Length: 365
Image 1 (cartoon, one colour):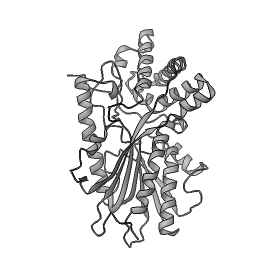
Image 2 (cartoon, rainbow, N blue to C red; image 1 turned 90 degrees about the vertical axis):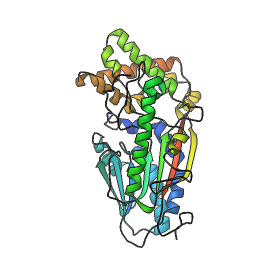
Image 3 (cartoon, rainbow, N blue to C red; image 1 turned 180 degrees about the vertical axis):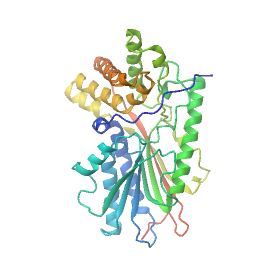
Image 4 (tube, rainbow, N blue to C red; image 1 turned 90 degrees about the horizontal axis):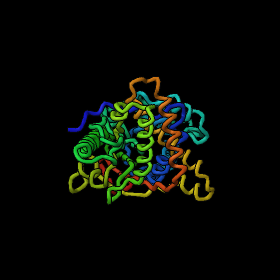
């Protein structure tokens, strides 16, 4: 049996760090926006004048939510006019930096409510592995790069910290947890979505060959951590507890809860599409030849998204910033010496909540 995982999920690095260094999730989410726009055109509304509710499941600090939600609101206004209130609810775990989120919603030039006084943003600090809304409350759901995070890390990973570096019993434990959490995520959303509503989910994915695309980047980070242990700046027992509760899935794993007709607890699969996320950082490096700038972007991405969780394994919480600084520096050095592209993959699922009174294959009028 593999050792029991004790490293818990930390929130993304605060102070706007995730907003500044999350270009990869932003790129993957951008590929899903056309699917979101199509879903908006197919929502079935009843005659009620209740506020239209959009749920952003896994918002982090909010910057990456602006463009998708702005597109959704634009589509809703085109269909239903300016008078119906729109309530946008951003959901993330309680440790999330909600101060940065609200700063973005209030001041960012691209904020979705800048020119629409009838749009009302709010936030809920709760895991989406719990019920977040009352039953049949949500009209449109959006989740980008959040459901890759598991509710817990089911096992330690000998020699690595991420599931793509796991084998044997550790990989089996992640497979089981990934299946369980995905089914729970879907079941909870099925209860919260109103009949006639839609849910669009974008997730980091494995392609048909089981490749995520970022494996070399995580391997470099893993080697940097091993170097810290060898130098004595990180204790071996702390390193052994480091594990990320993340799980990238293949298309077949995303479809596994659904029956042969694509149904699960009232949800219907409309689309399930794999896309490749262009490496914009590599493209910039090819134009500029600036290896240090390339390395800085990727090292900052690893720090902002994953290092807070790895750092929860440290015995002394006061040393977490020092650990993050060291790892970022070492990773930058490694990446600058051997730049290479990281072409990752995104899987977009479009799910309709069955409407009892309308045919979901027809556009609502």
